[in-house]
Amino acid sequence: MALGNGDKNGMSKKRIMVVEDSQVIYQMVKEALEAKGYEVFVMTNGFEALRDLESIAPDLIVSDIMMPKLDGLRLCEAIRNRSETQSIPFIFVSSQFDERTVKRGRSIGAKFFIAKPFEMETLIDCVDKVLNSE
Image (tube, rainbow, N blue to C red; front, side, top):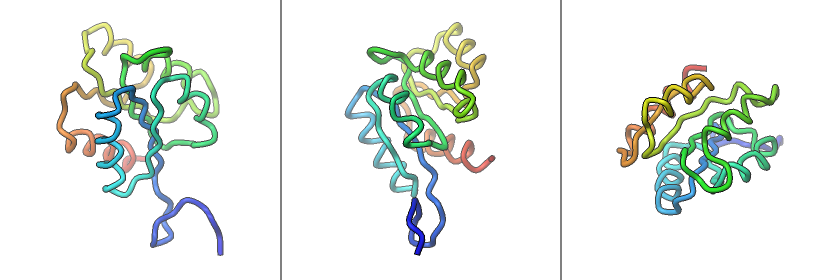
């Protein structure tokens, strides 16, 4: 019997890396996405995300923008600059969405921007769209 990521039907679960420094938010997001059948990995800053990126091999990254040490935009740029990770889709969830931030996020390939506070269904719908359009 083969071992690996999978659910009870033998289908591989989609892996989502959540990069968020607020414990309240990342717990809610993690629980909601796991309830939808996704495998979720939480990182509390961009450096943790970069460190564990290859070992986790996420299908999607959901990231805050305003974080200590390495913000979400710089994280996304760093991931885009690595050939082995440049195609990982990004969704930004943040309270900071001025025109300049959105323009920069789009230029580095963000799929969706979700403003905090947000409805969990909005996030789940965006995640489903990104992961089911591949």
